[in-house]
Length: 246
Figure 1 (cartoon, one colour):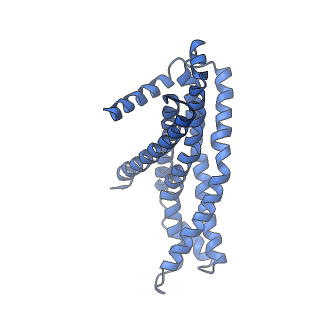
Figure 2 (figure 1 turned 120 degrees about the vertical axis):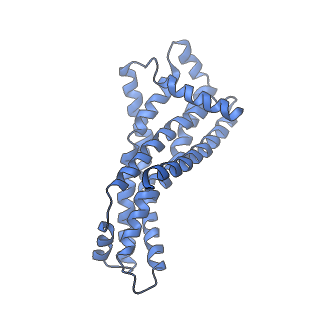
Figure 3 (figure 1 turned 135 degrees about the vertical axis):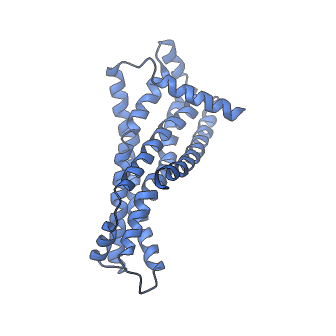
C-alpha cells in the first residue's frame, strides 16, 4: 500500500506542477539557474565518461574479433550501435541520476528541513510549480547532453582504434557509416526525453515530501537515485520493445 500511495502522490505532484504558475519574471530566473546547475554543470563529467567508454567499447570489440575473415570495419559499426542505442541515452542517464538526481533531492530536501518551503506556502506561492517546474524545463535540454555523449563516444572509439592499432581510420569511418538507420537516433532521443522527465520529477518528489532532518536528506538522496535508476532501466526495456521490435 505504501508503494501505491507514493505513486499516487507522485502523479498528483506532476498535476500540481502545471497549476497556478509562478510569475514569468521570477520563473525565468529559476529556469536559467537550473539550466546552469543541471545541464551545463554536467557537461564535463559526461564528456569525460563518454570519450573513454567509447574507447573501451572499441578496444573490447576489436580484441574479440579474432577471426581474420571478419572485416575490420565492423569495429566502427559495433561502436556506433553500442553508443547510440544504449550507452549514451541509458548509461549516461543512470550516471546523471546520481549527479543531477542527488543534487535536486538534497537542494529541495534542505529547503524542506529549513522550513523555506513552508515560508513560500505562507506567501501563497505554489511551491511545487516554483521548485519542480524549472527543473522540468531545464531537463528538456537533456538531449543536448546526450548528443554530445554520442559524438564523443564515437570520437573516443576512433582515437582508441587508431592509436591502439586495431584498425585504420578509413575502416573505422566506413563502419560508422555502414547500414546507418536514422530511426535509431529518433529512438535514442525519445528515450532521452522520457529519462529527462524521470530525472527531473522523481528526485524532486523525494526531496519535496521528505520528513526529518539533515540525516534524512542524505537518505532521501540515496532512495531517489535507486528509484530513478530502476525506472530508467524498466522504461528502457519497455521503450525498446515498443519502438525497435517489429
